[in-house]
Image (cartoon, rainbow, N blue to C red):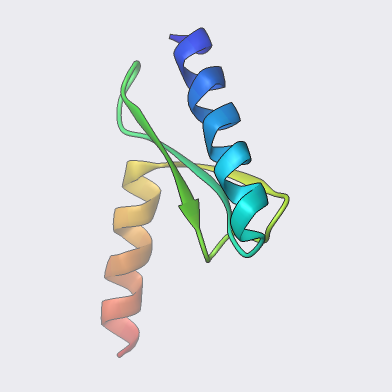
Length: 66
């Protein structure tokens, strides 16, 4: 699993270099389930990790404040 994650992050880094406006967001959905994506919410050159529950909670907080 760790090797797959490392390959996914390396691929995202390669893609990010060409866009230079998005960072890498790694979201863990379970013990061995994750997604790696480029995100405009993460500064270029940075990698942020989060759990899927955190993302869900933050969206619920946003809905409460609107």
